[in-house]
Image (cartoon, rainbow, N blue to C red; front, side, top):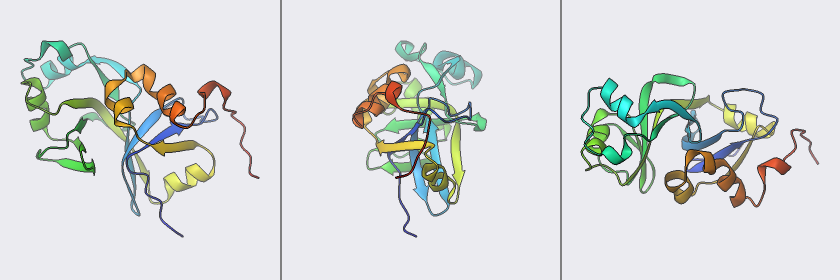
Length: 186
């Protein structure tokens, strides 16, 4: 069986997705290989702001213009841990380079640099991530749980969390409201 690589793709939850964690979600896939997949939900703001997060982890935030931005729910795995999706990838202590210029970092140094205005130009901060074991994502896709489309940096970093799902759908030429929750195979 050939291995598909959905790294740097969006996963769009189909309307029939019954798992409340992923219903109406847009997930950015950071890594997909024969061991499984790792992604970050990018359209679920939580009530925690960046200013509050920086205060909780005791990092100075000199960039007042970002203090009210929302932290995102990245997924149900390790929800007590921060993940920073950013562009450019840079050279931080613990970074997974997703695509040439995009990285996902779990080390504090990137947050410190962002707080000082010296970090990546574009970034999203999430708590938690989404993970799939070997073959799990492929199985879910064969069950019509997800649509996939190559990711778009503009959608990821320049649109609000609330705009991202419909913009990703537009890449497919589809309106989310027109999708059916019923599945079928030709």
